[in-house]
Image 1 (spheres, rainbow, N blue to C red):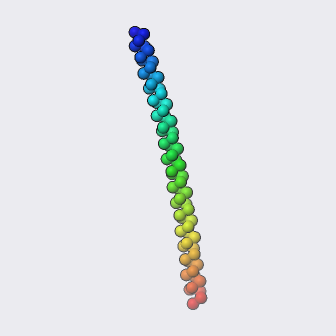
Image 2 (image 1 turned 180 degrees about the vertical axis):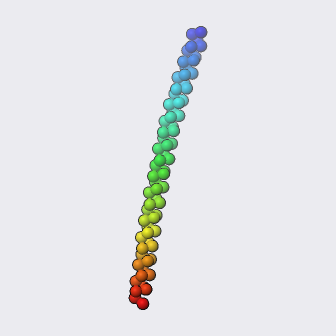
Image 3 (image 1 turned 60 degrees about the vertical axis):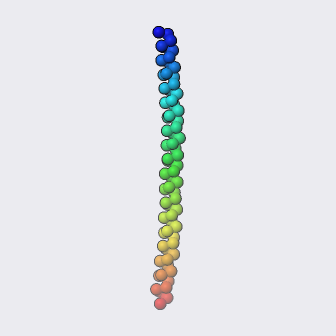
Length: 69
């Protein structure tokens, strides 16, 4: 019976170790996903800013051409 108890403790330790490793892997994956999401938001904000500046420039050009005529 002592051998069975030792084996059971070993299995519990292995399960705990696997759970701890799985938790750390999930944490790392979650951090990567959050970083990727933040980078995507930043990229879209930069693109939106560039498009806005470009549109403003085009509108100003058209406005100046129309007012010169």
